[in-house]
Image (cartoon, rainbow, N blue to C red; front, side, top):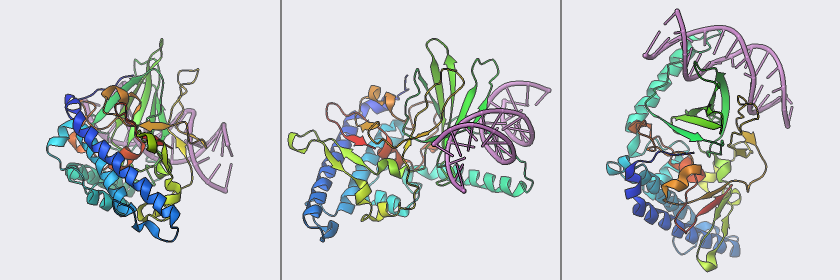
Length: 334
DNA sequence: ACTATTTGACCCAG
DNA sequence: CTGGGTCAAATAGT
C-alpha cells in the first residue's frame, strides 16, 4: 500500500516531534496525577505536579492536535495551532472541532449539506426518494492502494455496491458508522483494481467528525524511559470523573474493529466487525511518513484534498490514529 | 429484537 | 442518455 505525502510534512518533522514529545511528557505527568489519586482516594484530581488532571488532558490533546496540524503541512502556515484551552472547549462542548480557526470554509460546506438534507427530507414526503442526493465533490478525496484491507482506524458501514463500467470488480461503498449519531460525513469506497496480486483501492471522502470514544476508553502509554515503561491509563475508569469523558456514558458500549478483509470471492468485502478483544490494535507515534502506511489518512496526504476538508477531526485523529515516533514510541492500546 | 448487509430503485452530474 | 452514488426495503446474522 502506499500513501501520498506532501513535502511539507517532511520538513515539519522536528516540530511534530517536539509537539509529540511534549504530549508524552504531559501524559507522564498525568500518570503521576493518577498515582496521587490512587493514594488519596478522596482527594480528587486536584493534586499532581503539573496541575489538575483535566488541565493536563487538555494540554495533551492540544499537543497532539498541533502535531496533526503541522502534519497537515500546507495548512500549517496560515493556521493557528490549537491551544489546550481550545481543546478544552472542543472536548467539553461535545461537538466536533468546528470552532477551531481552520474550519471556516468547511463550516460553509457543512451548512450547505445541512440545507441539502433539509430540502431533501422535506421534499421526500413520499416514501421512495432513494438516490435523492447531490453528487459529492470529487475534489477533496484521497486514495490508497493496498494488497490487504488493513484497519484504517475508523468504523465503517457498507451501504452500497455497484458494478463499475469497464471494471472487473464491483465497487463497495462505506459510510462512517457514526453518520447519524454524530453526523459524521466521512465515506469511502473500496474496489479491487488488480487480481494478482490483489490490490484494493480505497478512496476516502471527507474527514471524520465523529469520535470513537470507546476506542479511546483504554489508552496505553508506552514510555521509553526505563522507569516509566508501559504505563497504562485506563480512561474507562477515568471518565467517570472527567467532565469530558463522563459525557460519553450514553455512548453505546461496544468496541468496533475497523477493518475490511477480502473474501476468497473478490466482491465480498466486509465492513466493520465487532470485537471484544482490545489488544489487536496498537497505535504508535512517529514522524516518519512511511510509518503512516497503517494509519488513517490525514488531510493533506493527497493533492486532491481541498483545504476546507480539514474538519474538526482533531480529537478523533489524535485518539485513534497511529503514529510512529523514531525509536521513541507512544503506544495506544484500544 | 436489534443491527448489519444486500440489492434493486432512484436520482444527479456529466 | 449513461454511469455512478445513495437510499431504503428485504434479508441475514447475532
